[in-house]
Length: 298
Image 1 (cartoon, rainbow, N blue to C red):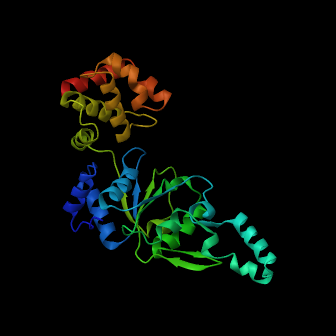
Image 2 (image 1 turned 45 degrees about the horizontal axis):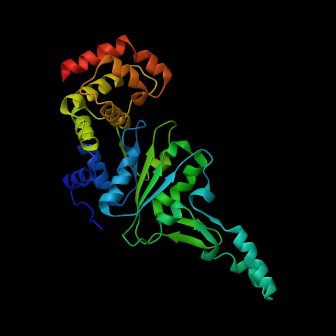
Image 3 (image 1 turned 60 degrees about the vertical axis):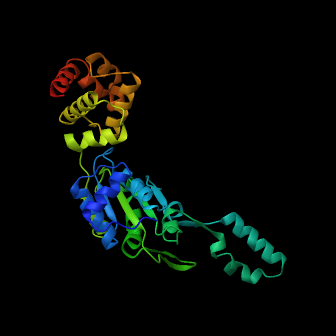
């Protein structure tokens, strides 16, 4: 298990050792969250690297990663715990057969019959130290589930009516992400440190691309980043994220491209843009002009 970083610079280096290129504001927020033992709430557009932060933290710190992928309708039974009903019924029948029917109702509500879901797993002891708990895309859930999370995020505990309160001996490292498809309630945000993860600037995106796709040549890499940066300045339904930049670079390498050209860009826009209206808006003259600007800039 790697010790927690003791400075902002060490936090930056820790992330870099896992292939994540962070700016100083993100490193500061993460360092404070680790030091203060507070959840870190990361908000930003899809594809800017929010989820990757939790993955890199778990890898570089040598901790278990426990991921709760949120979705509409997520409830306590899927996120925290549920009782193993078939096994409980079997337990009751065995107790009745042994003449202990009166004690059966009490004996089936023990940890032996409990199915632990991600949030409860994160509160348990782990051999490598407190795990990294990733609550991913919280904005996909319903508001009632947010209310349930308040106890988890403030006291690192959950209450099971039949068993009582389960509290973590040492709080997990909690990363909460949101793509801001809806607003998250202030009560939940107050329990976290907050950071907005924005699209990277040119220099940081080139550094990210070099880290994730090291075989991309300097010329092609510079042109890719310039083109993608220009796309983000257009009025698109969904501008490309960092993930799309990396995917596009790998696609162009698979095509043995040495630099951008209009025909190759038109043929591969589906890698970097995910909506037909955006592709139609860019394909043709817009793509050709943007390619020319990227080549001149490189």
